[in-house]
Length: 101
Length: 217
Image 1 (cartoon, rainbow over the protein chains, first blue to last red):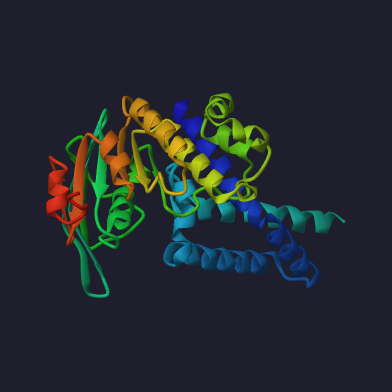
Image 2 (cartoon, each protein chain N blue to C red):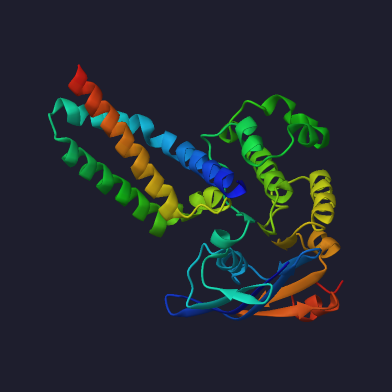
């Protein structure tokens, strides 16, 4: 039970990190939607962008800025893995909504 | 609980920074690290935490070695010299995340009374530092690593933080480094001096004079 609660807590923290990217990501998804970009291509672009962001945090100066999350035993891989998941969900919801409209 | 760091080797562009380091942190004790500027104190803490890759290191928890970064296997906290708290989260949210009482905090620091709904980037540098220090030392953890916790703080606040560290050491191991050596010596149970890539256990402050870290008068 404690482990499950701890896992949920980590997911919440990951979401608080992802929230900073939410607006940009939504804007980009809507733009790609208007350009009639297929969902698969949009997801690929998102993975590439998040991959660049991950490499930036992993190897450049901003490495220390993840210390807040590491203080809660959240590894960069777990953090960005979750971001990709949230981003996939966002893209799916936006594409499905557009299809319904 | 006992944490040990041994066999650390760190080089930057061919220059050896650390190569003969041993450090021990135990629950119930405060471990201090002193050393001249640029000797590798911050790097040492980051290696201990698992945030800095190095050529070699051995981290032991209760005598058992671990290859994974320490932060990934144990509940440990680090206070870096740079800003720790993300500006996207409000002070109230931070207290919830760290599971700490806001009331206890403002009892000690009434000046923060109106900051509950603010975000860290709306506070001054000193206020941010104090907030990050408080959250790091008071939060539940096994080991706390503090990199210059007294920097940017006023003497009155330093005294409060020192008292809190004395209280908190009953529940956790604490390692700190700072150039406020009098404050650091006041509260440390074990003191290491880091110079020329090696740590040396200091038994008497006169050794610091011999090493040229402090003046003899």
